[in-house]
Structures are given as C-alpha cells and as structure tokens.
Length: 241
Image 1 (cartoon, rainbow, N blue to C red):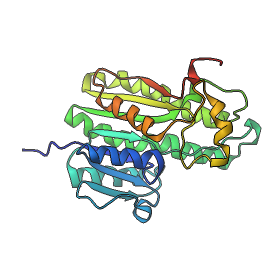
Image 2: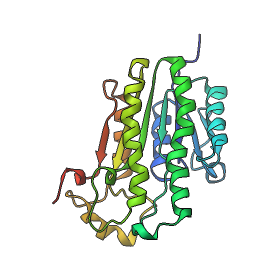
Image 3: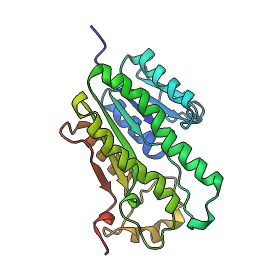
C-alpha cells in the first residue's frame, strides 16, 4: 500500500513564519520538505526522519526540481505547498531599480511558478492537494505613507493567480488560497519600528506569527474553501480607520 502520510513543502522556511509553519506541520505528523537559500546551514529544526531540507534560490527552476524530487523520493507524495518565500523592498515608485524589480520577480513570481507547476503535476496524479500562498494585504488595500508600489504589483499577482488556479483545478481536487498579511512581528521588522507600525491597522498592534500559522492551517484544512484571499491584517483591508 502506498504511503498515505501527508507531505508538505514550505518555502522560505529558515526563519520567521516559514520556520513556524514547518514546526506546525511536523507537530501534525506531516512529512515536510523545508527550503531556503541556506537552510542546511541555518537549520533551526531538530533532526527528524519526517523532515528534509533543500538549499537553493527559489527563483531558480532547478531549485524547484530539487524540492519536488526530494519530496517524491523521500516521502512519495505532495499534499500541501506553502509558497511563503518573499522579500520586502519598500521605496518610492520612481526609485525602484532594475535590480529591485528582478529580485522581487525572481523570489515572488518565479519562486511561486516553478515549484507550484511541479507540485500541481503530482497533485493531479493524486487527485488532491492544497496550495497556500503568502502575500500582503497591500495587494488589495493600498495605504497612505507606505510607498511600495512595485512590491505591491508583484505580490498582487498572487491574488489573481490564486483565483485563476482555484477555478482551473477545482474539478481535480486541488485547492488554491492565499493569506494576505498585514504587519507581523517577524525578523523583517526592526524592534525600533514596532510602536509606529501598530498604527497600520484598526486593532492597533502587530500580528503574531502564530496567528499567521493558524490561518495557513485553516486554509489547509478548509476543504470547501478555494480561491480565497484571507486577510490576516488586523482589519486593515476593511477600510479607513
């Protein structure tokens, strides 16, 4: 009988939200393939037969091939893909450089595309699967004083492709959803900025990594939910406050 223990792939997994998601899936009894540029060196996880680490640039198609090959050779399945890898480059629109644009596209769009394509091919064989993308609430709700238009342009693409793929693969048992995040207390934000960042949403605080993990797990489990953009942003997307 085939191994029916579920397997999750988590990108951007060496710290912050990604590392917490890896730990959550391991706690749930999943096999996990965790990937980041230098995750074998950083390795924040205790050794486990249920965990495989893959180094590499997520924007490189060979990295995606290595990730999926590892999942199939080690665990024989891909049930969940969490597209968490991302970078944040905020600046005025006219100051974005070609290097900034290429970095954003490579990590966010190419990083989504290559690993998702290969994962979906396996999910089609299984007739089941769940993809959860990690994006920003700014993709649906621009905010005065937050100058990040090119960042938003790239991340906002994930919202559109989420809905498109949800429709394309609904009859194949594959669900595609996105969590759109507000300001979360992660290493991405300096502690000196926390007080000012509390005003970025009507709840008046930073989000917690656990709250993001809970949302990702919810979408993983919510078998009648697909094409959803779930805002985990303290209500920022709801309007002016």
